[in-house]
Length: 161
Image (cartoon, rainbow, N blue to C red):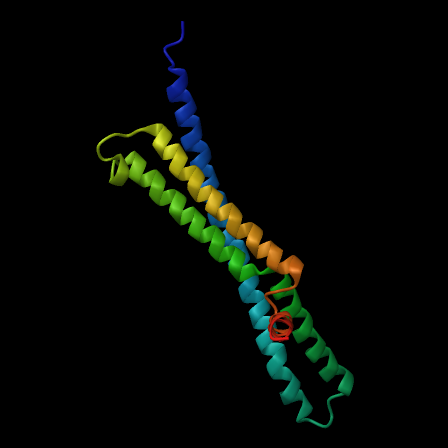
């Protein structure tokens, strides 16, 4: 016979999976933030390069146009993939899950009187549900075309008609 309590094994597995999820969210957040910063640097440097290159008559117009195009493409990609927003959402979710896990493990907050695992699991699922809804809203904005200054201005113009 086995001395392993099935409920305890399931709880241990849940905690391990939650810890792995927190790590994955943190890693994803870091990658997205790095992408956001890279694209911001590209936009800033190429945006500054256009007027600087224009001041020199010896620079071919094609080079200046290429720098301007690179600025526009980098900005469009950054807006399309919303690197900063998704980074922030992932970081926020990871932090909330980690705080809830710590409260449970340390028997603090709502677990001070009773470390009820079902309450813990419910609270974790609530955090996940909020995160899922935020993620869906972010991508619905991308699909709908909002989130870009042009789309927001067009939407405002239509609402005033």
